[in-house]
Length: 211
Figure 1 (spheres, rainbow, N blue to C red):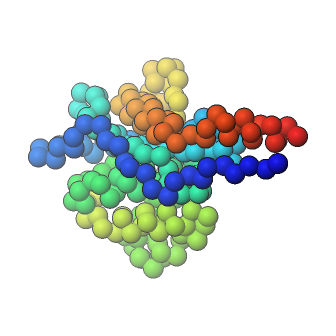
Figure 2 (figure 1 turned 180 degrees about the vertical axis):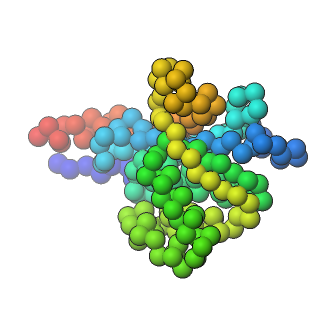
Figure 3 (figure 1 turned 30 degrees about the vertical axis):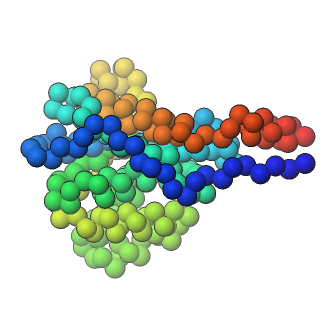
């Protein structure tokens, strides 16, 4: 006997921690770190429920703001959650504030940088980038639209995920990037946990796969 898994929701409320105070915008507000999580069953596509987050780190390397949410829609993949976080940053932060977005998804970082570079030279080429016609083309289209609303400098930087103490001490990853990525990873995991597959559905899935 087959069973029906509860589908991922099409909409989720975005959670916030702290207040985004832009009355005295300083360089610290350019330090934005984002991440995505595949949740408890990341390796099982049928059960995977993802989450995303982004955080702002202050001048004293302290957490000053965070936004996080489960990934919406039926396609639950980590790349989509990583991209959803970046799109939320672009839409939530003031378009005139220079941003440096740091993420540990190298493919997303490279593609975002390439599309951004093309958009500054030739918008038609940016709109024709293969990513916009891929499985995640809907999100890349949203990304480009949000990017084109910005008037200030935007850059996308890669950092090592789950860096070791040795990598931190050696300078392979900066202290603030280590802190920002760790916070973003934690909030993305918390967001994914908000809509995980139930224990009952997991048990039923295991029985059917066992058969």
